Image 1 (cartoon, rainbow, N blue to C red):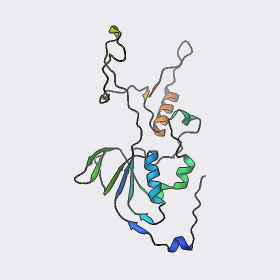
Image 2 (cartoon, helix red, strand yellow):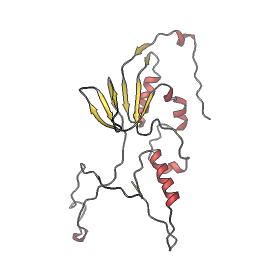
Image 3 (cartoon, rainbow, N blue to C red):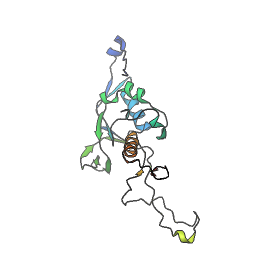
Amino acid sequence: MSYALNHTNRKLTLEPKITVNAKIIVVGASSVGISFLETLVFCSHMKFNNLTLISTHGLPGKKLLDTEQRKFLASDHCFNDKDYALMSLCSWVNVVVGRMTGIDRAAKHVVLSTDKIVPYDHLILCTGQQYQVPCPTEADISQHLTNREVPNSSQRRYTGKVPCNHFTLNEEEDCFKALTWIRNNSITTEDGGRASVLFC
């Protein structure tokens, strides 16, 4: 098991720290969000007493997948499992597992998908890169249109039912669900092939 070795001495113990009680909310456990929290937690002259992370799956680094299975997940390699274990952010940061659905700037609180409210003094949005389900263009394929002729808008979002064999891989939990589905539903066809699975 990974462990963290924390060293302290008399000088560090007696050095006064400025206490910051402001409610700092970080939304998203992306590399930027984790790096931001790490900077605040390990600040040598300030102590932040009210740090909160709002993330769909909590803190990363749960080791749901091994190294080989993790290769098809896009990563910037800023942090690995050992880094997460050594930081031990769960000791310093309050973690709210959920998805933020709204921000009330006047009342200074965020709304979660469970309709719970989390107040803040400072709000940091670090949601990271998120892949979306592709939206069908509804183009008539009988007209043999080119890509330039097909209407395309970045504002379009697919709101219909997502097929069970379509997976959008944003996080390790998404990869784990996809691998579980493949293992449980892998069907060998008559020609020896496998059933198709679409990844985005």
